Image (spheres, rainbow, N blue to C red):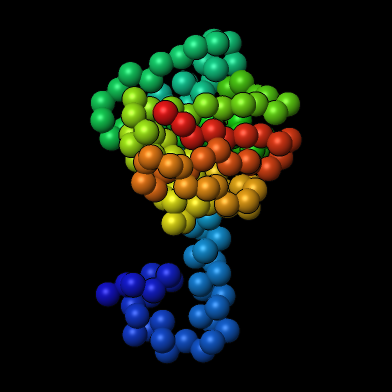
Length: 174
């Protein structure tokens, strides 16, 4: 059973000394609150070259004002395309390989869905993480300023939050 934050069995985790547990727990926390760093790496089983359509979509943003990702379910449209690009534009932290559009000034982003519930369950989850773990989505926790308030009328939905760097705003609204 691997319930500990370290991928060790709970038994093995408990055999570590206190400092080792703290270091492993902190390493896991940093991975959990900076998920965007793991997307489209240079090498490995999830390396960028395996996603040519995603990369072409990003590159098209440099020359096209509008693009559409029309694809099957579960192929990475929310996290791997829309959420990823939105997080890059909000933070201004573009990877070296990025050939798509780059903003050098703050941007306002409206993240919307057909209902408040779908906005919460899809868009808010991808960008911010669940309401009880804000910062575990694609926007790094270190870049979110303050704690978003709960949105009235929709359980577990949040009101707009600020993303640091050039005062970029995330508005999660339906």
